[in-house]
Length: 481
Image (tube, rainbow, N blue to C red; front, side, top):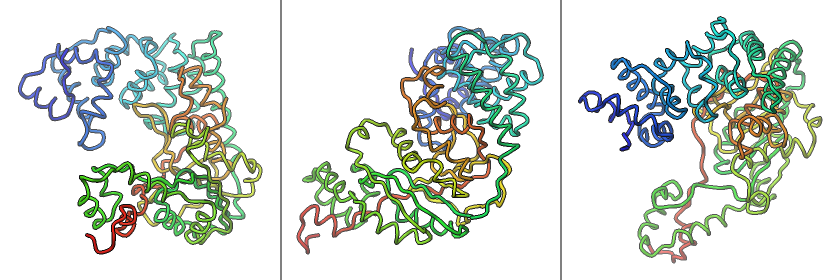
């Protein structure tokens, strides 16, 4: 089989020139890499989300050819559902049990399509589906997808859906079935309790600011953050970070992001004689900061802070050198919570977790509500997420009442709900993944991710290397240009 490039321009050209047949498309649907290749390879250089336009073209093409879907295998069937949602739904309405056949990767692809999630939701809530039970994977991913695709937008709608799914879970003695049942009930119970009893009067208007992860580019970003926190009476800062503040990896393609213009020109002058790995090692050494250096720098930037606590680790040491990036994030998130204890933070009305290099796109101050009647968490994106990779929330900024943020910070604890879902339902060997673990913990603890959010301008980077600094590294004498 020759792979067809599923880029917008190529598919459009093939259709317009009558060079694409049904047989060609169906043959491509046997590829288990088709969706990811379309998103990450064939759509490179296009605007974000262009692959949805590719999907629409394929769907229209097959409809015009009056193609009627007949199941073959789960790879083929999930590609049909993704690229030709309407055609799959025509089959699904009379064969609803078919949704139980897909694995996690395939069901995430399918549930990333709003049209499919919305249609299934309508089938379920209008009692169109009769005498059909769903497997544990569907019963957990579908409510996630309904939130992430904004199919359900109110607490009452979610409560109704959870009750329906509890009646349609395939009950047996498996760990997965029992876990799904317990988690749906937990979300349902915590959601009802939180809505009724979460009203809290905020009297002190103080903030626990947790800055986690590498300090790459922190000078610019934290200065802007400091200006946004003038509304708070008191701010205590809790930093957990690495001794290496981090920067962009050095190669000739991105050297312009690391060096000032005159320094870059000097570097290019020595290009044929330079070992970039040696320069990178020296740059890394220059980015190591100790406790005293970090404390002094933060005090000069975070002028609104009443106190600053700092925890610095070497990411080259065990066990940190064995952690993936997601686990490192979750480790830093939880450090001060576990070190000082959750009760220590009860004295704070608000808690904010922020990545050190996060740049806000506006100058608005952080919103403070005197009373919080819902278990609301504000992030750097609108509400819950459900994409081709699955369920999640934005994870660079979290803000809310302290009791709403604490559960999200505790994701590094083994045997939590996210860990159990990954082990017993997803059958994942990888325990930690960004966006997903924290979303599951927020969901199971009855939290609501606000559709109001803090928009991101970008991420700040480490200060660029100056001409003088580069000359010292290259051991170039003054006067040599």
